[in-house]
Length: 322
Image 1 (cartoon, helix red, strand yellow):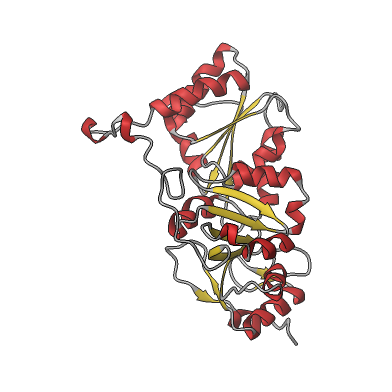
Image 2 (cartoon, rainbow, N blue to C red):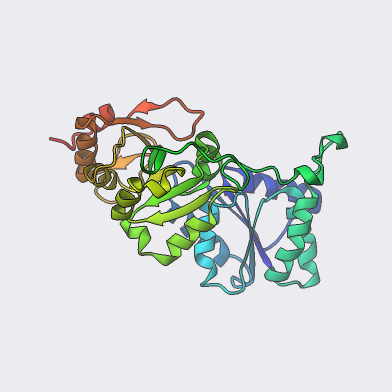
């Protein structure tokens, strides 16, 4: 029988499992993995792999994920090449979950089941009054940056940089769903020498782009080049960095960046936490000092709805600059 894993941000996966149990009874070979606010992507992957090992057949597994482009999606996607029998489906909802548990009894493989659930999951989304449903002719209304949307006004000789964010998770759910809607760029650019030379990570990032927005990866030197290229003067961009040191290199290369938004910097050996989501070492602290000394506003903010908090006082208090 196909093993099923529900994977989500927060407690959605457990909530769907509890609802399935209420409707359909106790299920075997059903596991849940949740991404908690303090959890690094590697920790989530470790929990996912542990959950799959507990299934009867760890090579015939259907993973139902909440959000395309989020950390759960990215971590499952990274494992698909290693497990030919796995299938991944996003948009986790209760009709989809119930259908998965019912249909696997017929002996379908994870791949066969995924195709069936794609239809069932969509069918479960309906509206009352029915007149609120958009007409087919209106269903192609463009998202920000989609074809047919008015292009931004041309900039002065180069890339229009609308927002700059440091986030070690790069293009994940908060960026794809919350920040892209707030900033409304037509392109998300991950600026990283490391990712630019990692084909797997590049592919995951381009796949994680939200509807109507393109995602690209480029090394620091390339960003410096295109930032001044008049051919990109009608392109508005959200820039994502893994490390503050790369932001320093971009500014040193002549690209004026005045406001740096800090989301998450993962904890690792040698780093200390300066707040709930940001951990730094001495090199990071020096990079933030350089940015501060050169007039950059440094603000910490997880999602657009949060109030932006200053980062520099936290760096000063860390003891890493002495």
